[in-house]
Every structure is written in C-alpha cells, then in structure tokens.
Image 1 (cartoon, rainbow, N blue to C red):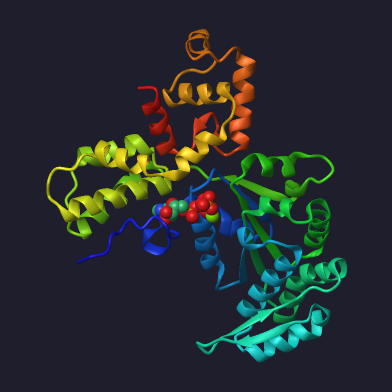
Image 2: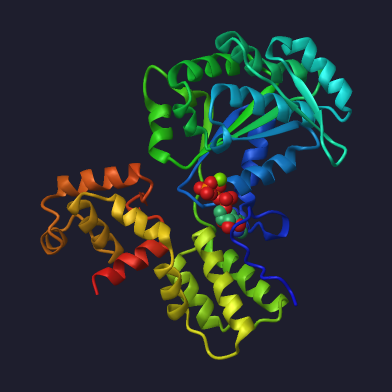
Length: 365
Ligand SMILES: Nc1ncnc2c1ncn2[C@@H]1O[C@H](COP(=O)(O)OP(=O)(O)OP(=O)(O)O)[C@@H](O)[C@H]1O
Ligand SMILES: [Mg+2]
C-alpha cells in the first residue's frame, strides 16, 4: 500500500518541492554573484524547504552550511553550530578538518567525537565570549581561503538573533560579514515585522547590504496539478470539484493545503463512502490546539472583532464594517492590524492561517 504522499510535517524536497523555480533561480544567482539575500514570509510558507533546495543547487560550487536559529539558544551555541557545520561540510576527511580547526580556533576548545555510524561530530566551547565569538564568526572566511572555495551560510529564523545577546552580536556579525569576500549569507525569517525593524532601524541597518525576497504562497495552478497527480499516482480517486474546494479553503497555503490533502487521502483510502471536505475540515479545526491558543492569546476585543471582519472578507475601512463589527474607527482598525501582524497572525491584511480563518468564521455562526 503506498504511503500518504501529503506528509506535511516534513520539508518539501526534490519531487515534492512544487514550483518556486523563479525564486530558486534568483537565490542561486544572487549567491553566486556574492550578494547576501534575505527571504521572508509568514510561517509555514516554505522558507526552510526553499533554502535547503537552494543550498543543494549550490553544493557543487560552494561549501554550504545551514543554521537553524530555532536551535540556537546562546552565543556559544551559535559558535558551535557555525563551526561544526562548516567543518563537516568542508572536509571529507575528519582529521584534516580537525587539524585546521585546532590551528584556527584552538581557544574555542574544539572536540571531536566519533559517532556510532562511523562519522564524526565536531563541537566547540566558548571560554571568553567576546574574543571567541569573533573568532567563530571569522572562521568561515578562513576555511574558504584555505580550501579555495566560496562558502554560503544559511541562517534560518534569523530574527531569533534578537533573543541572544541582541545588539552586540548583530553589530559584530555585521562588521565581520562586511570583511568576508568569500562567504555569502542567506538569511530568512518568519517574524516579518521584526525583520523589518532590523532592516529599517537607523543605527543597525542589518539588511541594507542584502537583497530582500518576499516569499508568496505557491501558485495555485501548479499546486493543484501536484495534488491531482499525487492522488492519481497512489491510486486514490479525487473529483475535480473536491480539489477546487480544497483550494478555495487553503488558497494555496503550503502547509495547510498538504495537511488537508493528507486527511482527505487517508479518509478516501480507508473507506470509499463519500467524504466531504467540509466535514473533514470541521474535525481538523476542532482538534487543532494551536488555533484555540492563538485566539486566546488575543486579549483585545477590537482585535478579535477585526479578525472576525477579516475572516468574512469585509472591507475593514468602510463605515458599514466599522459599525457592524464595532471596530470604533479606522485608526483603531489600523492599530489592531499592526498588532496582529506583529504576532504573525495576519500578513498584508489577510489572516495567514486558512484554518484559523475558517474557525473564526464558524465562531460567529
Ligand atoms: N515548494 C513546496 N512544495 C510543496 N510543499 C511545500 C513547498 N514548500 C513548503 N511546502 C510544505 O509546506 C510546509 C512548510 O514548509 P517549510 O517548513 O519549508 O516552511 P517554513 O516557512 O520554513 O515554515 P516555518 O515557519 O515553520 O519555519 C511543509 O509541509 C512543506 O512540505
Ligand atoms: Mg522554517
């Protein structure tokens, strides 16, 4: 029996990576030209998948490293992740990598541990925060020079740098990056407003030196084709109307589209009774703890009412909507939107998560 093709908890790679050809090309070209690039989008749009695909496309010509800031909890962690991923990717022979590592960053106390599967892991420990951090950040350029090969470093969920030692680290990183002519950085993040603040604020204009790319949802036609093909190839029939219904709900939101298809596929596979998208969706949103948590985290009544109006696709600035939904005034609406955007709940005046939107719609019924 074939596996469910709509696994939504994994990154999309290879054949499961739909479209994004334009973005991939642009990222690869930008990196090859030596310019840094920053990718942003709301959550679950496919940034990490896109980054991994881009790195794979660059592997032949560049040493690549991927750092997930969700897993970096201290400055020392950052040094460790940076140094270990670069060393492991740059050196095929562990000994060679390790001896270079000792030569360059000995004060960071590199250690070298064989793993059960015959590989090795490299890790470092910082002793003197300031000095060692600078050394760690300079390490990529040193490796690139030694190996005579440029490096690309992806820093995913980069806005989390603010949770480490904020300004000092940013300042140091920025100045180190400017000196590195053989290392290119690919930043990405989902806290759009936070990235923008880092980008725009005068005294630390981090992103002035990078190209900026906004990642949209996946174009619906390509995504539909992928969905239909995957149902067909796994021997599960789906009607055209049903595919239309899925996309009316998800509007091509990458993760939610896959999640809905995942459930529909399972239901269709296990019983051949007619299944309805609405019925499946109802169960899914009722069981989604995340949605209720989001709603409860919104304390302001005006913000909640703004979301209700948005869920019903109302024009938020019209007198009728403001009156009907008790939004007080256009400036209240604007303030609500700003705050909701900061929380990642809305983006460009739309509710990001289509399931949350459905859930809110049902609230008022
Ligand atoms: N190009 C794509 N084609 C098909 N599915 C995709 C694509 N991009 C992302 N997805 C799906 O969308 C979901 C989210 O992808 P991914 O984790 O890459 O996004 P993200 O923006 O990094 O999310 P997060 O905000 O959680 O970090 C996954 O289920 C993934 O399989
Ligand atoms: Mg991600």
